[in-house]
Image 1 (cartoon, rainbow, N blue to C red):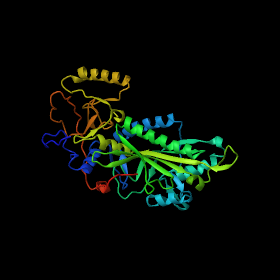
Image 2: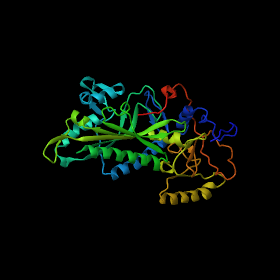
Image 3: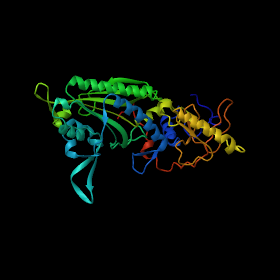
Image 4: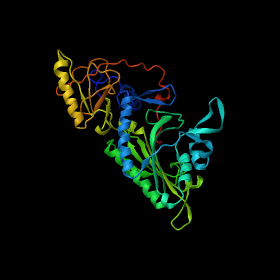
Length: 398
């Protein structure tokens, strides 16, 4: 989108994307109230509108995961350090990012606990208890959770110390079954990106140096962002028998022999929100595909004269009709308070602009007049911390 002179631009509180992509992204996340800084370095608060986007992505992804025969479960946040160290490559790959709990209840723990960076170790330990026969296979489990990876450079949604994700962990009789599972999930991830986020991706296999620590093979989907960089949007790992051997996950095969299972793991994160921003946003602000827009329609009654008796009832009728049709809609207006989750100007198109200070100038002919009352925007202060650091190099991975 071509830059407009400042006096002609509808939105003036975000840096133009073509001028400084990183600053544009940070401005948009803050001004559209998707996320905010927290007192914990490297961690963000996902605000209601940003979390509503995650819920819609989560619903689409969860439905597809369940449709392929997987079920959801939950495993502990804390992992005994001895479990993490069982798989040598795994612990070596994650060691720089691991956070530990050493004290609890006023006492030093006998064994320090790892704050979950990923769950192969704890899940592998449980699978060893659950699997005895080929009849127990396959195990197809997914988990929705948070993870902690101590990052030196962080960026909202793209790379933070704590983030939300889903992680699937499966166990199979044969290598062929595990490989088929790995590629099936890769296709599932690509479908979510392309049909829900309207974001084309390229599927491929990671090099030996880039693969997941302890995996046999790693596949990923990569998307092209608005600044010309590639972003890793999801990964699917064929773990081979490495973790099965480390955690002694064995079963009696059909021929009565005892074998180790073949495993997979795969995940997608809140990074998808950042990807949607960078793919679809422009100089005027946030643009969302309809399937992840928390509100697909915004009804804005214009407050003039006796509007509460004339305009408002009609607006409420339209709202009820749209809700009945399955459309996500909100009624905006001068009485809207801080509990509303749409801190933006928008109407039907899915285009969202950061909140302006007061009424904007009248739009051009043919453009609906949309107004959201101004809200005080906190000064930048000194809390920008390491989010202001620019990302170095090409592809951003997780």
